[in-house]
Image 1 (cartoon, rainbow, N blue to C red):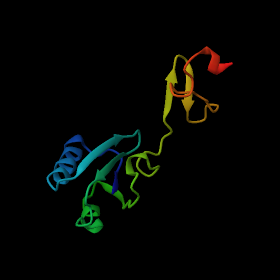
Image 2 (tube, rainbow, N blue to C red; image 1 turned 180 degrees about the vertical axis):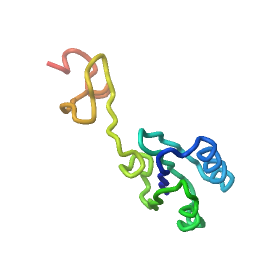
Image 3 (cartoon, one colour; image 1 turned 90 degrees about the horizontal axis):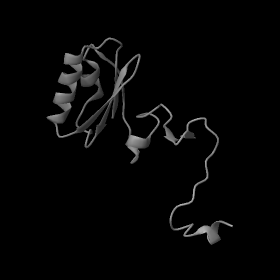
Image 4 (cartoon, rainbow, N blue to C red; image 1 turned 30 degrees about the horizontal axis):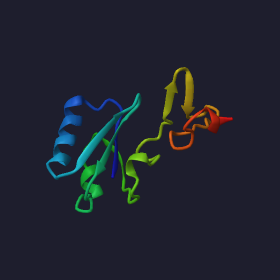
Length: 112
């Protein structure tokens, strides 16, 4: 389940929301954005009614995610991930990077 909060939600309210879901045995990840915050809930969310979550005046949207890859899903993590390796950008809109792992290249003779 993914929950987005309204702009300007106080930290005390974010903490209260996290605490309430953790008490239900869920793993909660908070992603802070410039305009809004997003909670990712992992665990059995079938007993959570969307209308109950939306009753909180600070909650803007609730989305159920049934995909098994929630933490990699664009709904949960909409921003591109870019990794900087010695000045080379990998990911996002950077050019495609091709890398060989240790099982592919074991010595100089394998590269030439």
